[in-house]
Length: 170
Image (cartoon, rainbow, N blue to C red; front, side, top):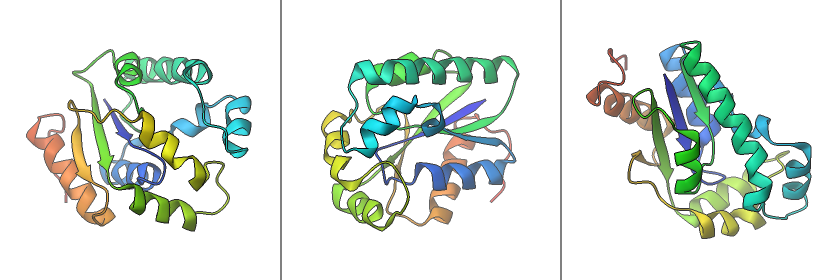
């Protein structure tokens, strides 16, 4: 089973993803590792990615998701997945893949990005992510302003309620 933690930069995808994976004893992967070098260079220079830039990245991610499903590997995956078309492309198996959306304000995420060091995604590019964001309706929607502990507890409860998880550890 796969849980995709999505949202704009600064939403807490990696932080929440790692904590959720640890709480479930699942694997964790970050979509940033799937970017071609050219994408990272663009973003490092403050240039937003186009859909053409994202295509090879999305293909790599979809292949990984399908491989994990084929191996019956349980994975929490942090991925921006900002547009509905991206999510539809990545999620071909809605029974075994669930999306969690970390929702929050531009100001909150801007503050987080300003405090973050040594990351290619700069605060100046946050507006471009909000501009293309298509908030999902098919996701578990979580207030990213809450504490990580509250967020993990909420996600686990929702996944349990959906019968995606068959046990509930707090």
